[in-house]
Image (cartoon, rainbow, N blue to C red):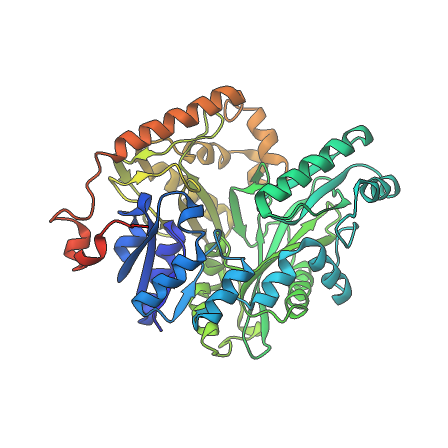
Length: 499
């Protein structure tokens, strides 16, 4: 099997490593902004697919499939983000004779619609948050639901995800404007203006369960991840196992997750996300029909390589593990290291990495997508790496994360490392006293994230973009005789993309 990775950054590097360990040749795709990116250097082959904007490169299914055809790739791994949960892309790969390393297009479609997935989960007996089971036909339905259920309510895009296309409404007078705003965002972000409403669960925790299924009907779960620590609905710290989940609750969560996966005939790696109230009752939120950013913490405590499992499942192999084989040992924590300035409203900080020292030592893992001398582009998600610390228990995992953050050095750009260093010393974090609003409240009590207004932030982003562009002009390109491309014997593949 020859695998094309339809992604970039650290997740592309992660997939390449798994393929290499299994003996599978790999093909990287890249935009003009990523011509000297780490995933391009690590792959056996690399193909240019377009200009820097993702809509002209990484979101171009036709160019990705053409790259597979040209290189003789027989399979496509979508990573996460971009086209990973696009059912049409999955089907296009299959129609082109490629093995899509992920679930079936039908499963992606079923779980991609928040309303259809809620209907299926309700029918399967999986607990769901009270709310509309179909997209609202108009504002009147939203208003009627809010009147009956009471405020606060959450209005969400039916095709939404990733924290986008949602609004919390606490007063009746704000309902109409929130409805119109979410409709607009839903159309802009997802190409579908359909929205629905559900009851808002106050001070919830965000708990997700990793599942694996094969093409023979076997489905298991690999325990839960605590994903409650979020900034503006985006996860920033994840850990496994959850510090508040008991063995009995873990069994209930796992059983519900397996039931949810079976309801859509799911195979490959996937994640069932739940909201859990203070009473420890949990409700289905959504399913991510792909590999998760935070998958390393599950790998660290179970010893199961999720990417290798995806590759084997895609080839029709049955799961080589049963539920009884899954044993959670120790504790793992992940911090998402972003090229953002936490002291100036978390404004993006692209540019040239002039000096880089990554942490090492016992219990430390760093899934990295950059290197010393790499210019972080402005065009994509600013994640640099996923820093993971594992310990015999949560206290040791936190201590190792603190040590790893102290060792981490990135010069030339700003990063979120100082933010995480402060968080690791927080008493409420140590005591696991938090909910999904904790980070935003914590930031308001510090000097982080609140010192810049939107106008200043926009100006900072523009300035960073200009600086990143200027620095990128001094970066040596792969045609040079001493480049990594030359040393890998891939000079012929290094030509610029042309329309």
